[in-house]
Each structure stands twice: as C-alpha cells, then as structure tokens.
Length: 443
Image (tube, rainbow, N blue to C red; front, side):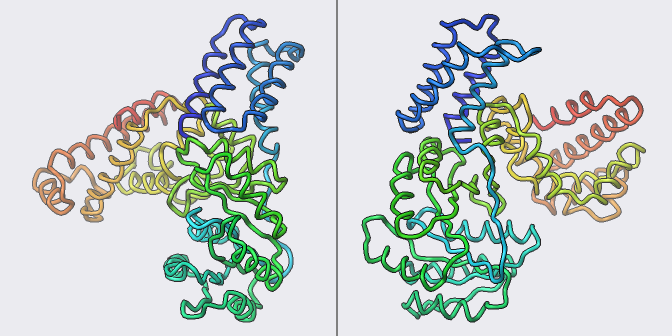
C-alpha cells in the first residue's frame, strides 16, 4: 500500500523490532529513517518534523508501561503518532432523513464517477438501494459511464446527455427520486482556478442542499491535494473526503496528510480499479497495515462479506470428514476471490505485510483462476467424484478449458494434497502445518 512508503516503513519497524538496545542514538537514527521515508512519499516537511519530534520526545522521556519492553513501547509510539496524524478514528456516513442527498465533487480524472459506483455498491451491502443523478454536462462520456455502472449494479439513474443545464438536471433528478432513501449526485470535474465551474458548483449545492458533500481527491496529487481540498471547502461545506488511487501511489502519504489538514474527515479510500476495492478509512487499521503489523479486524470483516456461512460450514464439515470434493474446493476459491486481491489480504495478516513478493501473490491469483477455468469444464459427476477422472477425462477437460493435460493433473494433485492435509488436521488439529502444506503448492 502506498508503494515505497509501506515497504520503507515496514522495513524500519522490522529493524526496530530486532534491536536489543533502545538508547538515544538508536532513537535518533530511527527518527531520521522515518523522516526520510515520509519526505520521499511527499508528506509535508513541517508535518514530518512535528510527527518525528513527538516520536523522539516520547521515546526518550516516557517510561514503558509495566510488562512492556522499551522496544515494544517505541513501536507503539510510532504507531500512535502516525495514527494521530491522520485523524485518530474512523468516520462513517450518518444516513438520516429521506431522501439523504450525497453530492460528489472533485477534479476531472480523480476517479469521481468510478468512486460513485464503489460507494453505491458499498451502500447496497449495507442494505440501501441508492439512485444516481448525472449533472456532469462537460464530460461527454460521463452519463454513459454512469449508465454502465448502474446497469451492472441494478440501480436507478436519471440524466440526459443532450441537456446542458446542470442545475435543471439536478432539479429534475430530485423530483424523479423524491421517494428514494439515498440520492447520489455526480457533478462535473472541477479545478480551483476555474471560477465558472466553481460558481456552478455553488448553484448546484444551493439547489440540491446536500446532506453530505463528498470530495474525491486523487492520491497521486501528493501535497497538492491539500490546496485542492481547501479550494473546494471554501465553496461548499465538504462533509467527507474520499482519497482514490492508493494502490501503489508514491505520493499517497502526502495526499492523506494534506487533506487531513482541512478538518473534513477522510471517510473512504479507493485501493484499486474494481468496485470492491473500496473501504472505510480507519486510521488505526490503515497505519497498522502500512507498518506491516497486519489488520485482522478488516480481514475478518472482508471474510464475513465474502463467505456464505452455510456453504462454509458444509465445506469445512466435508474437509474434516474426508468427503471433500472438487465442488468444495471451487467454493473455497470463490470465497477467496470475493475477498479481494491476494496482496491486500496478505497485508492484513500480522507478520506477512511486505513479506510476500508481488510476483508470488500474482502467481497465486493466476493459478486459482486457471483452476477455476479447468473446473468449469468438468461435469457435476466429475466434480463430486474426482477419483473417476482418468486419462480420457483429463484430455477432454483440458481441451474444453484450453489448457494442457499437465495442468489438469496439477489441479488434481493439488486437490488430493489439500484433502490429505485437511484430513490430517481433522485428526490431529494441526492447522498451521496443514495450511502451510496447502499454500506452498501455489508458490
């Protein structure tokens, strides 16, 4: 996450965790390394100096709590001070009233329209069914992009690409969806120097009277994000910020710290191109992952969203009883895929953040996709009776899925090894050993 910043901070924390002595010299070296990592990621120098001064003062003057080593105490200080820099706590949308009107703002190219789709899907998971109004009369493809997103999500859209009256579109959209619980308004991309567009934004804000004005900021802007956020906050009451493109941006740290200065909370972040690459911004969880300390809470939440409890229970029962079939394995793969990119999942596991090479996780994802394609060419009988898949069936399955015979055999070998490992776990309770044997087959 955040490209080199995450790697550098994780490396610093590993180095700190391995130190046997924490003295003044060690603390000063640690502070310099943190300063270097943050400045390289375009975080404002004044903020960096303030942050690291707090870390240094606390590390040198605070006594560790009872039962906590000096090393552990310093690690916790770094974590706490970085969390404080980004706002300390998570902020959710407080949806009250009907209709609850959300007005999106942001520069063209910030990912605003895609982010609307992400928020809409997020709200659907929360039990809401939002409608969308398109008032972007400047970008020709804006309405078509929203139309594609809303059709995929099965939600209502109002707009007219031939109508160039943004305020009129907003008024009509309000009438069209007056009985909806949530209405999301897309607006044209804007720049702080384009006074005519900013004036239109004021007029739209007066007509819509949004319950929540959401500013979308491109994470690749770095410190410039702060200036953009300030410009927008002067023209309308910005209630929340969404920072996009944090999946590898070298300047993401600068953008996050810059927008945190205007007072409006960062409520969500975009971590990829897919609609599911979107999450509530929780500074504590975010910094924990950034420092390579994992985020079990988010991992559990993702698992709850992705996993069908009945299917999971049945699969686990089959695994432990020795009745595990290819159908059960396919269900496992489906649940893993729904949780998101493998790299993001691995970052949430304490101790694994930064350890798994990008190439390894990509290979794992590619392997799972290949296995799923192969299984889609199998009959229900074959999926439930893998032992019956002999050479003639292997050849037919390979031809149907467009792979080599060896790849089908590799899948069957993986299945057999998984079944043996899980059966062993059922008898002896050796979860870690069994899981390690399974995962090493993907590497």
